[in-house]
Every structure is written in C-alpha cells, then in structure tokens.
Image 1 (tube, rainbow, N blue to C red):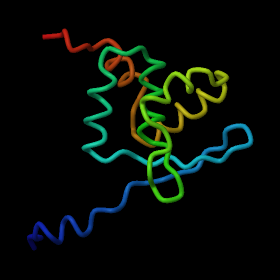
Image 2 (image 1 turned 60 degrees about the horizontal axis):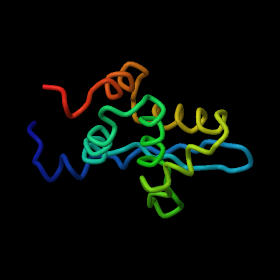
Image 3 (image 1 turned 60 degrees about the vertical axis):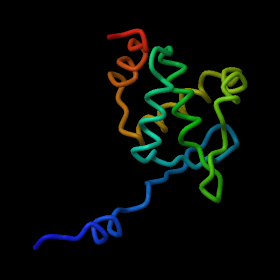
Image 4 (image 1 turned 180 degrees about the vertical axis):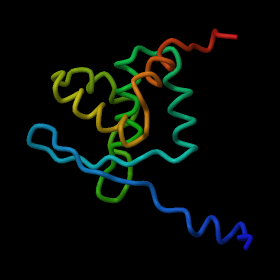
Length: 115
C-alpha cells in the first residue's frame, strides 16, 4: 500500500534527545534535523576537528523548551572549557548526530577553496 506525502510527514518522529552530565550540570542534546545538519556542515568546512566539535555543541545543546542554548558567538567562551568538559559534550553531540571521527576529519580537511 502506498502512503501519502502527508501520512509520511505525520509519521516522522521528533528529533531524538539525550541528557549528558558535565561537571555539576545536566544538559540536553538534540539530534539535528537535515536542514540543521546542512547548515552545520557548511559552517564546519575547513575548521579544525575541535572547532567542528564545538560547532556540534552549538547546534545540539537545547534548553527545556527545545531552543538552542549556544550560538556561534559563544564559541570563544566554549573554548575556555576544561578539555574533559569539552570532550564529554563533543562526544555526546557527535554520537547523537551520527557523526564519526572520520566525518569530523573530512569536514576539517574540506574547505570552500576545494574544487
């Protein structure tokens, strides 16, 4: 039986969320949707692997209403986190978004100057 377009979109589940404990804070991370993933990948091209991870944090940490907690303007402050905090958040956001170390490496080595 063929499904209708409206039935298909109505059956798409909401983005998955998980909580992660960082220090004495519990943060909620949400998987990006396709549009958010495209914007993330565009922003991440040519960045270092650490910057790619920080961009994933910005794109995935949400508040209780589902709004993003951080903006790209927060990246300089995020860079001041202790490495164990940053790595915990990066690993969680990369995992929920199905981003592998190879994906991060590919984004880091690709720049807009590439053909």
